[in-house]
Length: 365
Image (cartoon, rainbow, N blue to C red; front, top):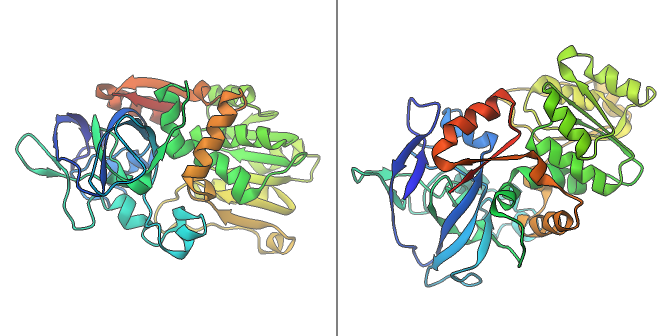
């Protein structure tokens, strides 16, 4: 099969032919039809996350079940699925419906191997290539998936390129608005960063009935798109004075809620500083290792809160159907931010995402 492989000393992806094992008893073989390109994948390719090389990344896959292991229950060949992250399913957080905070989250998703240390992929020379990245490794034609990573999609006409980003980016932004912040009708919200996560937060805030949705970004086309997707006000962050602009737009009060999706510590601080008293900020971006979030201590005394949120602050099996139902009603038009590429053009997609000309790249297999 064709796959995009991360190898040492390569900032981009190497297109290769790999072989894949038959599924073990607890695995599901999925034929991937589309995969979203996420910032986390780029961080892995650049070697800034401790995922071992060589590895097939990709964690926003969708496709069709081709075969199931002998111990698999709940999936069968022909099922259409969305793949998200892996979790243990037995810890306290998993059992309370918060699998993104599973203590095994990091080894299961970034370790890129089975529990016994083996892998299911080999290159043309017969050398092992790490897989099971987020329980899927979907930058390939096929993947050996963990059960916890898969969500069966109900009968729908939604195309594959729209389904793919649901596994991470879309539910990360939407779920933060609905679950971590609990945005309510008539409230105000500022979204810092208009990438796929930020724009998903915009659509979710519109669904939640927010009366004012303010978006800032450094790319004008993304701001224009934000207006199409429900933003009431947008401004260019290149000019600085982001907090002052948010306060000016809210008659000096600040916003009830804010979402930060850039991963830049300075922007995280701005998201907190833009809050009104009793306001709450959700930090979604991945900051550099060792970075600090700095905020005014007295401002926190005024009832402001800061929360983190991973992949929507709710089980993907709950969030994905919710977004799909809204999409089918025309209330979550996420296809407006998607651009498609062939898997072989993954490095062109990376360039376009890094330059800001594309919001959400989806690779077609």
